[in-house]
Image 1 (cartoon, chains in turn red, yellow):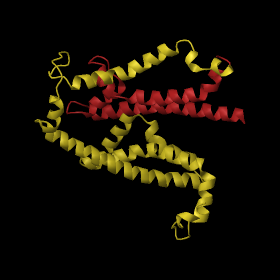
Image 2 (image 1 turned 45 degrees about the horizontal axis):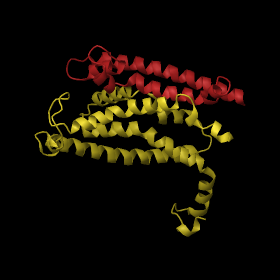
Image 3 (image 1 turned 120 degrees about the horizontal axis):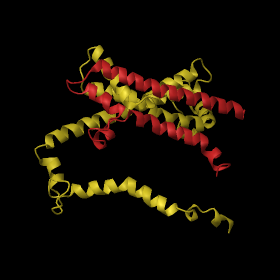
Image 4 (image 1 turned 90 degrees about the horizontal axis):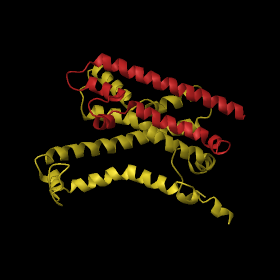
Length: 90
Length: 190
């Protein structure tokens, strides 16, 4: 398992993790419906700032930029690692 | 029987895992289907089978809202699909046929950015942009945002197809495409 299966699926598993991680970071509808009032996620926090009159647009914009930065840093790490792996393979 | 040894169905826990996944994914759908036929208004009381809520959607007090919403959804879906597929096809043709040009990696990244950026960030960015240029929110803004958001979803499969059939396509292209850009009759394809 550790010698054969995991190395074989590693690139796919990483890509799959990224594909799930990014939308999960940003999702707002499902946590809104399922999380109740106490369990906030960044997505719903941002959404709330732009809905109705109570929200604070600049705050929402800043929050979404922070979220964007986090995701982009992660994607850059992923891209760099992939480039390294490709070089190692030749 | 060597092949039987590698049959995935004989792995330990295969059945339990399958059942667990199916239940987690489909049990909620079954429950929703079930309750849409409930005669009572509450989710917890079961008062017998009825098509009351289905009739309500089409003829009840909320039906005009439903019709308007369905119309909007259809318009947006059809227009967004058409326009973004067109743009994505152009982009894929350019990326696949363009060879090695400057900023190739950058273009690829830019085309696929809406896929990488969380949905809510795209939404917020588009909203603030439209707001700052004084564009009223309405079906047009939904449409524009949707087209922008959907381009990578159309682009990825199209470019995968183009890359996969690169050689035959360009050969066909050379043989069948006249300088005017029109295709020769179908009989010339093979």
